[in-house]
Image 1 (cartoon, rainbow, N blue to C red):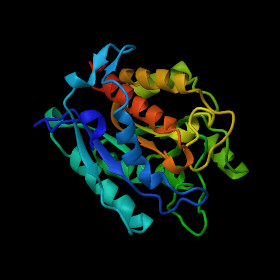
Image 2: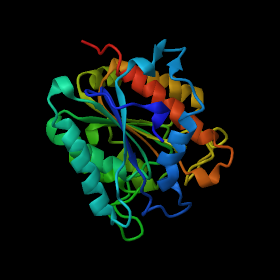
Image 3: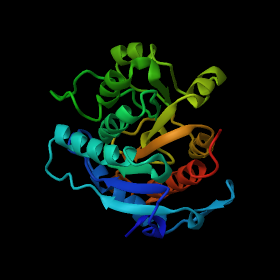
Image 4: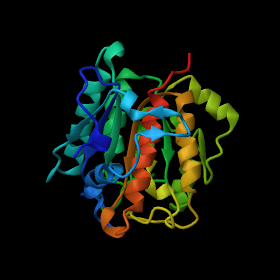
Length: 283
């Protein structure tokens, strides 16, 4: 099953890549089933966005299936994601497709950033998340869903990260987050920060737990007082103002949402993001 019936165009403008991996998940595992659930849920939504007035039927979208990461340790899984994304980033600009990764645990973001950073020396990262994910180590692992942003900071620098939705972490993590370009509980990014982002290549990582669990219960580490689903969708539509070179949507864990509404929301976020980012780009 492909995402929203994506075809196989010769020159895609966007490519869905599934990353079914949750080996470092520690509380409620199940995000390895996320890619399958998001593709399933996409069959229930329309290809057309009445807000953006665009249709996925007019986008050269392909679904490349899932990376085979079963039984790999986190380090090797990250390397595999990096290699796949580096291959996309190394494509001539005229043929380059927007990689959209669906997870899977948040650790995959490190691989994506490592794969893109050599091709985009000015790379910045926008993180929508409930958690800081800035631990130095978690349960004897230096690479995990709880350390992913710390490892990313080591790749691109703390000043190149903009975080929103953050409402959980250790005292030490919040201290480090305070040195980022921007880190806040809300989605209100100051205009000066947005202007700074417009001058850079941007990678966007969306942890579904940024959304309040009343609207997205199917995730491994739900946190109360989260962002509204409508606000996240509005933010995603605004990404068309930026030069986004990659996106991921992670931590959808189907076993904890029998209703399937978390996966439906994730599929809708993916549709809106792809439509916003494959339309006319800023000059």
